[in-house]
Image (tube, rainbow, N blue to C red; front, side, top):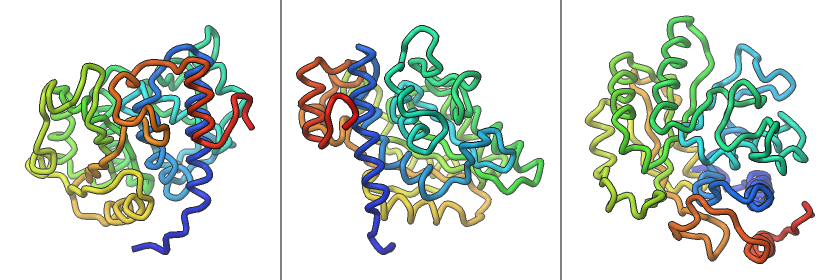
Length: 278
């Protein structure tokens, strides 16, 4: 277990959550629920684990991150801005015509975005290609990916899972954001993917199950996943959709709905911030 001193990460996560609310409110659309559930995972990756250089986003030795559940891009954009890839002021241009921050990630426009994603299931296949290329080049960098539990209903996820195990890609670590809700309701009711642990182990992966909001568990799992074992690693992260805002938590309506003026003000009050970035 780690020392439990995660004050720096918790501070970043609070700011990221405020940005998610402000961004989706300003845009009048977006996906706050699945963005809020992924905050601790992204914060731990970008602020403790991954080798990246905001001044040189295409640095060849950087670790690669792919957001397969691309609709959660407000969380990724906020983390990239906090890390210094682009000004935080840009965040309020989310989904505007001409902005480099579109409703789904675009690798051609946004510094720090490795893959254009949004068609669910495809980000993991892209990650398998990246990891295989890294193996063939003898590179030291690693590939990290975030997929959704609803996204796991896509057949392409399991084709990618087979390929990653076949090619023994132990330089690939995947988080599954296991918040239990998708746009139409509970994941288990729409197309139940359970038991997730058995399925991923059956496909030849190293499988770890953690609390996706607990930094100790996240960082311990990432450290364990780095041990070369000839298998890709799946970290099943139990999370809460809408985490951090009381009236959004575990509410399916917040999968793809922007907060109103009053809702945004209330959410930011709970998070300890104001509408104008204070």
